[in-house]
Length: 494
View 1 (cartoon, rainbow, N blue to C red):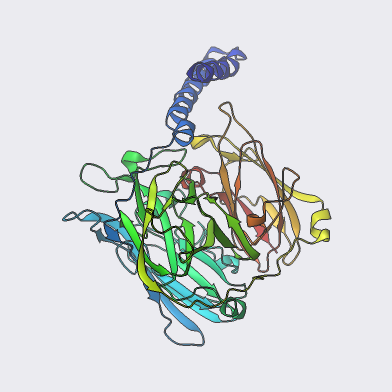
View 2 (cartoon, rainbow, N blue to C red):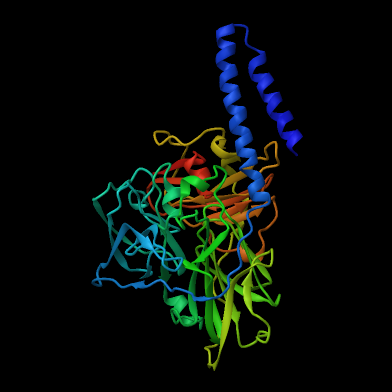
């Protein structure tokens, strides 16, 4: 593998230098080329291979009960008013050690904001950090001027108020910062929170819905602590995506979750910078997926494992009244590392009957027959990542689309000299439908509303995209270092 890398980079160097006749130009190109070679080797040795064989996570010992984020209650009804503050603080992950962190309305992570479809809401956001930031509402259908992309920075000490209507169906969404070139570090140090959208449908389906009792948010993040037990992002930063060896769930180190013998709803969120998470039960028994990023599936899909890339969410049901609870029951990853041990309480309940039909989602024949109108090619590694051969420029509009009109976006993940890597593609301001993956229908558990889709090397995905609001929206790779390094573009909805 290393010899192939060196050969490819040497070929690049020869091609770049070979055509130069002017000695001064040749020297300039030679210096630039050598910089590219050094950067390329750094990306390769500290990049793709760290994703092919990532740092293994330390298993959870189950010594700490899982922290449950507080629910943020509204102040008022019309509009429902919520106050969210980005702040700096310290968090005790390790006993007796204070780690410097960021958080929303607290020192690490943030609350769950629960809103109702059809409701008018007002978000009052304040930046009490020493750095500029933004508030991006990931998965929320919202006018462009409130989306919280890199154009909407809130400077240190400043506030911004946003009022809008909730018009989408029930879903588990999240919010996090999106400042240009600074997103990865701010998320790494703790800026992330959740949004629950509820509607009439979600309340009649008989789903587990007692928050913190049988309905749990689970924000999965891998981190690496330095010798002083600090989240020293610059020390561990990887331009191809920073991966850690320490698992935090809801900010809890070595968590466990105590549940009753009943169906339990887990809202899985991959909030990591770059790590993919594959989830399975230690008993290899089935669970049911009931929702994707932006809403319910039409009916529960039985699975034995589920993979989420950064930015993706899924809701699953585990029926603890039917599992082999005599074994050490836990949620594990594909390497059989224990992520979350379960403690089963000797307490049975009489759960509601869950409805068989959860939604009426479909990709219409008209959408399937629409021609491709926007083509995107994802390519590169490290600091040399591009979309359609370009890096992000806030002054350039890459695409224009009409409000309320469905178009087909085709995204291709072009392999590089090392084969390439998975890119989670995220589109702001809307929920889309996956029309096809390599011209085939998506698997059943991806036939639902999505805002982030995993695209493998040499894979082509077609999306049906409609924006219900006007404004400027980002589209990008949700490997946060790739986003920071320019793997991002802009669509203007008119």
